[in-house]
Length: 589
Image (tube, rainbow, N blue to C red; front, side, top):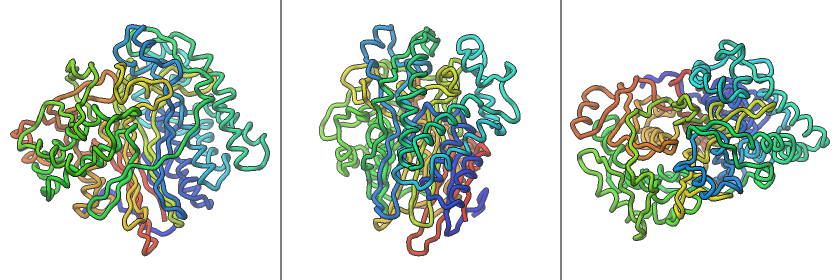
């Protein structure tokens, strides 16, 4: 089978990411003797510089990994929580029905820096300077700015000029979107100061990392966040609001570990983040497919129809049952009997309504915004690059990194948030806060209700899989609500249809928007499928005959998957990355 690039194979180490410069930095760390975790951290910091429209220091870092020694899959939670003053009463008192999709009110505690440092301290081997030097270099001396990053800046340029002048200082050199080499000297200074304060703590590696964390969450970064968040600035509500986040919120937060949720299917064990993410939708989809029996032929209209209808059911459950305060358990949602009943809803034609289930007999309750039938008329499509409005609201987002080394360490991580367009840049720091709080609801008593100290129900969804008890596969993609749809396609292509990693990524992709978006203003496009036209006109026409509203997308436009794998018996490592968007790359030997 032809693939756009080879599936890489070797025995030393592999890394794949959504940007070739991040991959190169991670590979350099591997060559210098670092492990997969060191490589992922280095790549992650570089992604903040070279894909600033997709992630930043003010964002978040969820990961799933396994070490060569323990082999037990573990979730790293680098997702910040809602501030102490982020109450439903406060936001309702401002006349809001939804948390804004941009601006200071949408901020959670920035977890990315703490997440990366926790991974480095506990499972890496390199010093902070070893992994941070690449990002500082690109921020200080410049990098060739990606066309999509420049286009994003162009979209929000007027907002920056008129309402967010601190962002204009960073992102509009010479009062225009950047071209060619672009540097962020303010962020270079921020990271250099953090590194200097870390090394002032002495030569001990762990003390340096802890000092860096303190500089960020208790020192000059937290102080700057606290001061700036008191400023009233325009957000996507059309009004000017100050934030509620404080330095105390940063000081009280730390990255943490927890076990993943898992599903055993067809000889594999697939691991995902828990119900504070959308990750379990991938497990629910697989459980539903298992209940439906043998899969139709790859790429057929029957296969696409089944995958789309199953996705609608799983994501309807996401809306009713997922969140930090979830009432339903993951055991109930993955119960084979529950899946069998839900699978009976998959018919021969497209469903247009949102149909959450009743796990263990519980009655679903949806946010009032959804029962009011907020529906959209625009198409949510793309490669996992953001769909950005002129007010900075972003639908779809994110970067991804996978890494594996010769010792057997393996990791999947999906850094996101703190996009340059999400919030005004903090003076002197060179970055902005994130907007992940938009995924909370302003209704009391829901699993994802806005609650101080709670994590939002995020879309970020890295994946790790085992065979015979051995961690062997890490994969993921950007793409907001599409992440666990595109990942399902990859999973089926690789594990059920027998494609290698690269072929599984290259295969035509599609997704449905027939359930509520996680991003402001939380719209639904009932019955819509967005499909790469490489599926073929006969397939697309048959889907329309079945009642789907098919949007034909360019043949290489959906998803930005990457993956790495290992064969414990032979020691062979493999990697693949997505050609769509022409930035993702894998490297290894």
